[in-house]
Image (tube, rainbow, N blue to C red; front, side, top):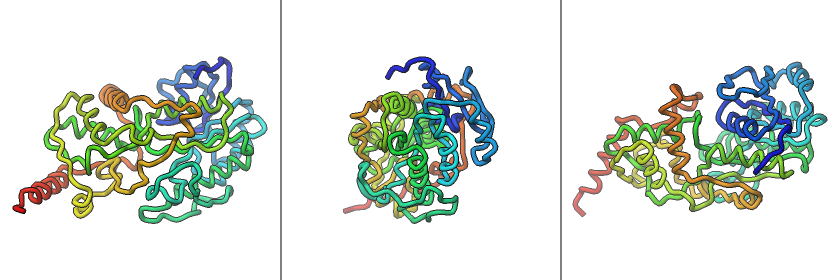
Length: 350
């Protein structure tokens, strides 16, 4: 995925995780990169132009236009359709392509059923405001509705041929701010008996943030359009492999006790949060991304993602975080209670 020097790229956001990875990859490949945000840290992104402004303020967006034109815009910070529509319309005359970072949450059946790009997407108008959509337990969310509306907004402003939509599932890697993989790494590093969810052969599909960034640039250079699911291939990695990689990265030898899903559910262990990446629905890790692989997506080994994330955690001095970090992870007390219940159940005479 080589890139010619001198190409101009605008990244909306660009300071955290996915945005940071895209900026770093583009800058390393010789792109002339502009970041537009409210002034977040750009540590490690020397030589990248920062235009300060708030995308929700029309005057700031109007001022941004003076820094154009650009070959492409990558939007990693769009969440409200009406705002994305306004920003995209403003940029359409001075940018050739618009790549929007969406999510598998736009699908009506996620996480219940397996998905392809042909699966039904939640309906949301391109000019919807922040209150559009509803949250349902284990079903569609307002976040998913609004990301779907953002996709429609980009297509409305740029047209189908100039719009690229990436729909990643779980993204892991250095600088992850939700804290899923960092929690597992720290838990494994602490040693002792570890509650492992379900079975070690459960398939998982997390993808490295750097692979997402590489494909985003590839999609722009190759002139791709339309929507692409972005995930690790089905069957490529397992939960057991993830935890073994955590043990190797931290140089620990923990005791992994695999506790069945039904017992975890009975004891009220919150899926996706208290035990990160654990969820029982069939469709969670059944996202077909073959279209993206045919188009050029490549996926590094999961153990490389794990090792590099541990190196980042132990050398960066401080981890990024957002409001969801507080929800991540099982307390030592609850872990001990559930493990004790499991041991009691298997020790009972048949």
